[in-house]
Image (tube, rainbow, N blue to C red; front, side, top):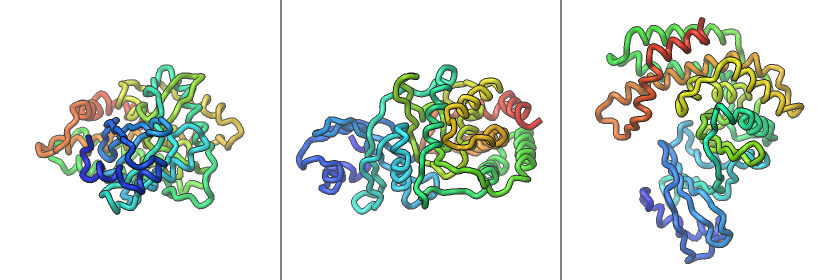
Amino acid sequence: MFTINGLEEYVKREEFLEGLKIPKDNKIDFQLLAQGEYNINYLFTHPITKDKLILRVNTASQMNLSDQIEYEYKSLLQLKDSKRTPIPIYVDGSKKYLDYGVLVMNFLQGVPLDYRKDLYIAANCLGDIHSATLEENSHLLCPKNPLEAILDECKAMVQTYYDSPLGDKHKKDQIKRMLNLGEEMIKNTVEYKGRRCIINTELNSSNFLINGENDDNYIIDWEKPILGEPAQDLGHFLAPTTTFWKTDVILSTEEIEKFTKEYIKVVGDRFNTNDIEDRLKLYLPITCLRGITWCAMAWVQYKDPNKLIRNEFTAKKLDDYLSEEFLDMIEARYFK
């Protein structure tokens, strides 16, 4: 069942069983639920409570953190009262008995978000999460100028494409042009002084679990949260580079404006949203640049015949994102 050396022995250890209040010698059946690039999730049923739980094993950190699994655990604890996220039950980031960090949380039901009919639900989920009250001295990373931080990341990622002889010269020039315009857009922004909250930073449709307007709806995968501004989350959620990845949907300007007004409405007086629309106008193009530059980097990596893991869906999407049609659409919409 387990593909990770030592995991079968780990889940039988006294510390693990006591942490979950499972009596010794109880049989637990684990099923592989999902495997990503950095985490492997197993589904199991608590033998006493009969609750469905997820065993999450973290193999690496996208944020270059030594305590990645504990970072995620603490973030989920902060969001517990929102009732929109998994509840963490157990964490072990010591790597004393296993080479990887371990987290156990409750299993949540739901289907991925449908951009065409679930935007109202998404606005409510995000409004509740962004309104969460955080501890005064939060563990969360907090970039001083988030827009500048994203652009710096873009420039680092796209260098792989610039340096590759496989990269198309016209596309290199087009991406450089958009990056220069992006820098011009944010040149007068300084350290962000407005309200900060916990944000997910990876809000694609599969990170939502939807059960319906009058039911419980959730956001999962809290691997890369930061202490940021709400507009950054909204920008990532609404940007064409996000919506197009899993669903081929590109939201119209009218749909984006309608969602934003709904979000402001559901937040109400929980926090000041006066600057949301103006900040979103900056985050949408900068988020698009992040998506394009990541795709450019990944496109080169996928051309390496020695690449061990190759996903054909991803390979096709990388071609789509670097197509003349897609790049022209992004440039015309945000950089003209």
